[in-house]
Length: 102
Image 1: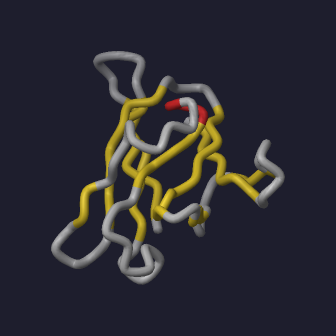
Image 2: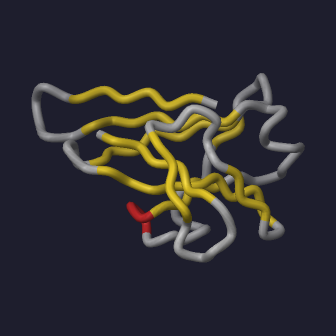
């Protein structure tokens, strides 16, 4: 898994690419990015499957903030990023959330 952050010079945006490796996706048919940036909605940020089996999605985030997120693999399976900026207990009491700082 990886997080790539790119701050734009032309406007106050941090383009962030979230990637989950094929083996971490556990043969999922669909993968969604969920977090406080989309109110934890499962169906708003579907990730795209690449030819190598990994999943990726680029979104724009407000810079200078901290966001919690998870990858949703379906069937109530949620995983964290393996190299987040930090982690925190999630509000659902089911483990940790990954944190990205823009």
